Length: 336
Image (cartoon, rainbow, N blue to C red):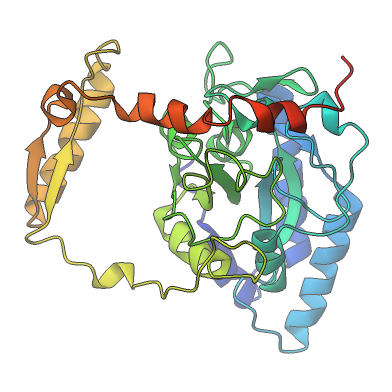
């Protein structure tokens, strides 16, 4: 990630100051996405003309006094969420020919706040893998090494963010689909508490399956401050998703670390040892937290789990609780 690239907060400040137009920022973002995609293969659909028209409208609105919080900000969206006028395929042949006639609730909220969706990003089929590859769009590669994966299932979002192409994006997470690719690529993502953001407009729908209490939508970015920018706009009940509720968000700047207990888990007995670089990063984070007053404890997964099932085992048991009925129904239209 380029240290010189502004955050979304920074770009918005420049837009408000008149240092550049929404059209200039949107064109720049589209060009960077096109350049990055030649290497990472993360874009599944986009409409450049519509995005630039939206940018022109944002510039006109700002000149007229519009002060919406995201006015003129380009965003990218994971391809399991509806974006008006673009397909929502979720990597499966069963959805060939589909075009969304409206936005997912969170996309609609971001758009209403002034954001401009500029591209949709690749996922594994039905968002059901920790790698991003499918028979419709192919494999998305890591922005620093095409032999490696950016993870999944929000791997397309992570790849464009890691390539300094996207500024901010929207992902989904049930068992790590935001957290894993953010870690693999070196960007940031937030998996909110389930119910914080509505799932309306996501496909396949998880609310009737085993992951109803696990899956949620969240922001992804290159800078932490941008997560705090997007989440309040995405959050809250929409009257459609029965799991989404209105609960006030706290102020992250008001959270003090002094007295908090923080557990860190570096190695896992069922996985290869972490690399020296990862270990050094975790150690540095632990020292920073301790310096701010937190109590940091190194955890042992054997002590945490004992003889019981691991979190991974519990997740896959829950995700497959319907015996695959939901997945078979979702792919019933596939013929190849």
